[in-house]
Image 1 (cartoon, rainbow, N blue to C red):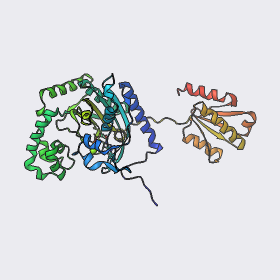
Image 2: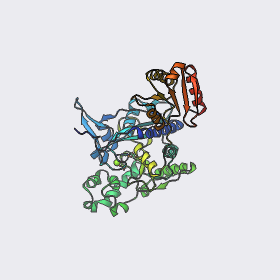
Image 3: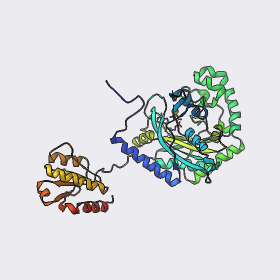
Image 4: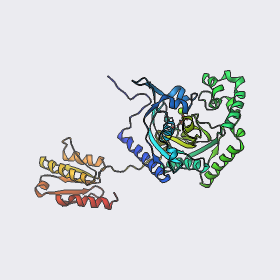
Length: 427
Ligand code: ATP
Ligand code: MG
């Protein structure tokens, strides 16, 4: 039998997982600095939640969801995105009643979409996202964007482009929708079957079509910018002035619509402009969703957020040839010769670990020379050598691998000496 990981998924091996941990550490740190608190929601939800909030005419709902019937005959779906579950939780736990609004939340975890696999596109991927729910202040839109940019900057990325647009409010969306229908209707036969379906229900989706993206009618389509009412235009202007105050460069793209239906007002994407980056250049997407909480029976609670995948963050780092600095992962490697030395070695190993010192020993019965090679390969800062003579004298030889200096230390003083040495090195 020949088992493989399911298509579109990947094993993250130790040679890579440390980078994920670093990325996640940056994320947690930035969220902490901006006072966003972690929320963890289930991996699956009622299918209806996504159908209603993400939107019936989106690719995500139409083609990409992993939906199954559970043993109680309920339709469940592996979450394809994080905003709907977070808003569900916000309403369910009445977070709108918290004295401090907006409620600022972040999440990281696997999302599932049945997509065609390609570089940067997986069927299971890890999204980090934030949501600020309960404020209609354009300054929070700028904060959300700034947080996303900060994560990329902390990861060492510089080739970034922020693209922003306003989708307006319900009123502008309605008049724009009518104009779009009028624009596309006479030529709708030239479009894919999905677009035909979108025409009456949600013509804005045509602009985001992956099949017909290059059709000239998409470029000439009525631009949302011309349909923004005064209030929406003023809101957008404020968001962009805050960005300017924060020295965050942006480009306005009047055709930017996001892949999910719930957005209004601010919509944005952050792209990688690095040459080494593949066909997919979007690293992060987000926007405002003022009607979402109401759509599932909550009170009116305007929100804004974004999501980015760790996969694409790491790909962008590769493309820009920036990397996290690898740190040695072991402080002490214990090398022994003979049975008694092994016994003493294991005992000392336990003491080292109990003091929080990262230590390891050989478990494959290798010769001393091979054990020394392991220590080198693992980039151990220190090696403890124990032979018969050392056992007899109850001492060990401590070798500093950086300068190859070594000294004999009594077993009773050893832990303190190693701990002091590591503190001096700043660990
Ligand atoms: P795309 O246009 O690339 O399909 P999207 O509009 O579907 O993106 P969102 O739903 O807004 O993407 O998700 C936000 C972010 O999540 C994306 O910018 C990307 O970083 C990441 N992402 C989305 N789908 C995938 C996937 N299948 N594999 C890896 N990352 C993904
Ligand atoms: Mg997509």
